Structure formats: structure tokens, C-alpha cells
Amino acid sequence: MRAAALRGALGFLTRIPVGRSEAAWEAFSRAPWTFPVVGYLVGGLVALPLLLPAPAPTVALAFPLAVYAVTGITHLDGVADLGDAAVVHGEPERRREVLKDSALGVGGTVALVAVVLGLATAAFGLVEAATAAGAPGVRDRLGVAVGVVVAAEVGAKAATATLVCVGDAAHEGLGSALTEGATAGSALPVLALAAPAALLAWPRLLPGAAALLAALATAELLRRWARRRLGGVSGDALGATTELARVAALHAGVIAWTRF
Image (cartoon, rainbow, N blue to C red):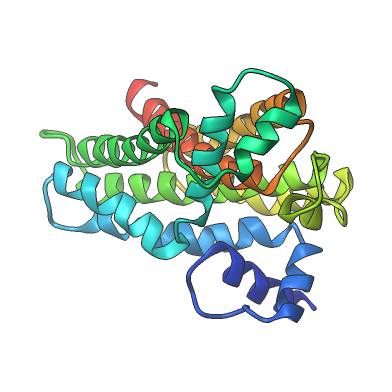
């Protein structure tokens, strides 16, 4: 069952061609703990551009491409839909109607640009910090940069899983399919599996911890917003949580590394 759940998590959270069966999906939908586990793998893969012998602007371009090559763009649809819903006035029912509209509005466009730009600028900041002129130990500092990326990815996945565990679905759909089998207690294994990611930027402790905490804080903010504005969690809200938590975590890691 655990192996099936992990296969399902890989199939749902990445473009890796495994875990696409109905049985794998069913196992995954009842196992929020698989989110952070997959985060470690995804984080390691998307961090590879930081090791390229290329200038920071080139890495900044390569990093978002790597993220979406590994994870796909499905969650970006949630960002776009929530961006459009956020600028709509009215009751939660009106905003939920906007979520179902396939047309991309101004709010969704701005949200998408902000997320992709956030990834690129975070990568730029990490490379600049790792290769700063005159600073000793470039290899060690690249290790810190990679650790921040992995911690951010684990944090983003853990943030989404936590929202699955503590959120209430706004309506039937992907959100309810994941939340109905989870309880607040299901978040404990998620957090336990994600916690070691705070140490991945060793010997620096603050950047990894800041990335993890920023991701979880993002999930809490989105949970409150979704409850107030949408009536609860939806599949779009979960997808947007992954994307926004990743960006928040990366920038928190960069700030904690370069300013403290």
C-alpha cells in the first residue's frame, strides 16, 4: 500500500511516468505523507540548474524551466484561477464560478507572471550568494543553495499536504477527493517527514528552516483566504498552494542566508 501511494504521488505531483493507475491514485489520495517524500526527489532534480557552469541570469532562466519540466504546469492552472477569483467582487459562489471559467483574466495573468518571476529571481539570488566574489568555499556554498531549493520543495509539498489535512472542501471535486479521507492528525506524519529538510542547507541552519516555515505559513494564509473567499479548499487552491509556497520558501531561504 505504501509503495502504491508513493507511485500515485509521483504520478500526480510530477511528470515521471509512473503511478497513473486508478489504484495508485486511490492509495495516494489517502496518504498525505507522500507529498513531502516526493518533495525531496523533486527538489533534488530541480536544483540541478544551480550546478551549471553558467552565469546567474542563465541559471535564473533554466530554473523555472526545470521546475515545470519535472512537475508539469497543472498547478499553474490553480494559480491562474485563484488570481482571477481574487479580483472578483461578490460572494464565494461568484468566485467559484470564476474558478471554473477556462478564460485567463488579468488577475490570473499577474499571478502567473509573479510566480514564474519569483522562481527566476530566487534562483538568481541563490547563485549570486553561492558564487560571490571573494567569499571562500564555493562548493560548500553551492551545497547550501541546493539545500535551500530542496527544503523549499519539501516545504511546498508539505504545505499542500497540511492544507489537505486541515482544510474543508468548498465543493465536490479534486479538493474533496483529497480532503475527505484526511484528518488534522494526518498532518503529523507530514510534518515529521518534512522537518529534516530544515537541515539540508548545512552548515547553515537558518536558510533551510526559514524556507520550510515560510512554506507552511503560506498554506495557513491560503487556508484562511480560501475559507473566507471561496467557502473552503478546492483543487485550484491546493495547486496554487504548492506554487506560492515554493516561491515564498525560496525567497525566505535567500533572505535568511544573505541577510542573517
